[in-house]
Length: 127
Image 1 (cartoon, rainbow, N blue to C red):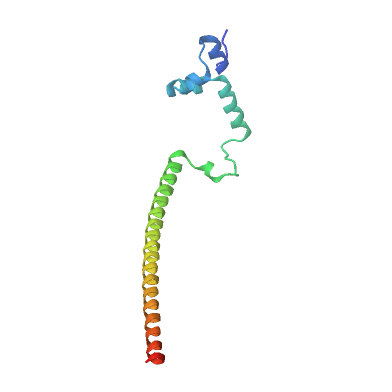
Image 2: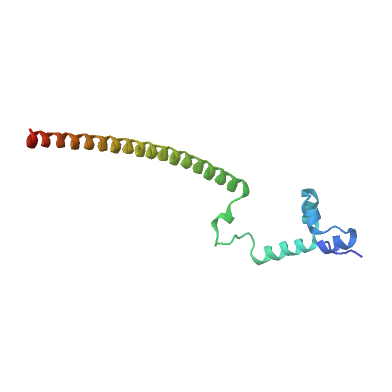
């Protein structure tokens, strides 16, 4: 008698759980190719909606290599943007440092002019 091939029958026959053969890519592929449950699901899915992709998510229409290419492009773009942001941030930090230096210099000039003004007032009133 031919038993259906499923995770349960594999466990009953040899004691391997699904988690055990899921970690081995070759064993998992073998299971996926010969599983009667998965074959039934694939057949039911094909008859329910033959060769159609859910219109909800357009990314489901892409093949894996296309998705990998898009992912790599997105990662490159993110790296490029991070570089740009780092450059812009460094520019802003340099500008902030320059502004702080100029404000400190302005404070010194104001202090100098205030002392000069006081000296002129003293000479006018006291001299």
